[in-house]
Image 1 (cartoon, rainbow, N blue to C red):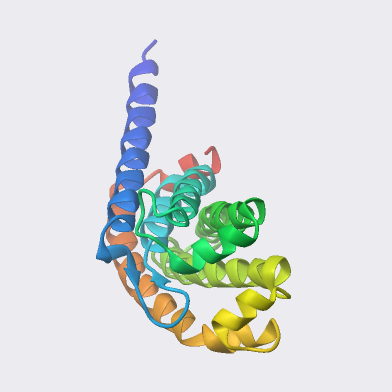
Image 2: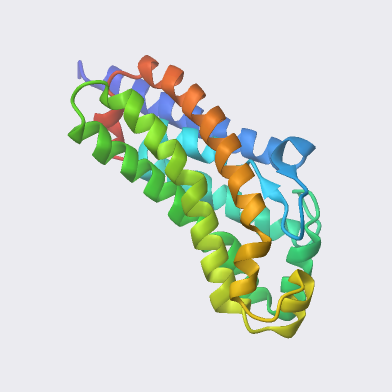
Length: 215
């Protein structure tokens, strides 16, 4: 019975943090804070709360936050909840099912992998493990988001003439060169912000790694 209180407290704290990060994702998704329009595909900064949440809450929490991000991204194709996404609307007109897969699956995978990377690194690196793990995980999150999203975009829509026309390229490989600038900006901003915030917050959770393993 003596352990019941701390267990409930930890669980409550995790739920509060999860709800907080979900709220931040929705808030950023409905305001200019979450996006920057450069080129065809808008740069998204929603990976920042996903990265920080995955570091704080572990793989399962990261996957849930990624799912919120993905569902909001899909809703934006309809012009609902998140800011309207013109490119997403084009993809929706081609195939709603494939568009949902493109919006949802990569984001869940990114959140889960980011949390997993942090947990594994924090266990392996002894000296300054949490700080270095935060930095590496914060780099991996936007990088994984770009790789998985663009890769799946090429697989699902890379041969569609309408999509190629939007990018002004002749083949799926041309899409990579068009969004290269977007990827660099997203990586830089996400890394700086999420690494700095996570590095501070993680010290308030001394048992973070243990709890993340059990997430």
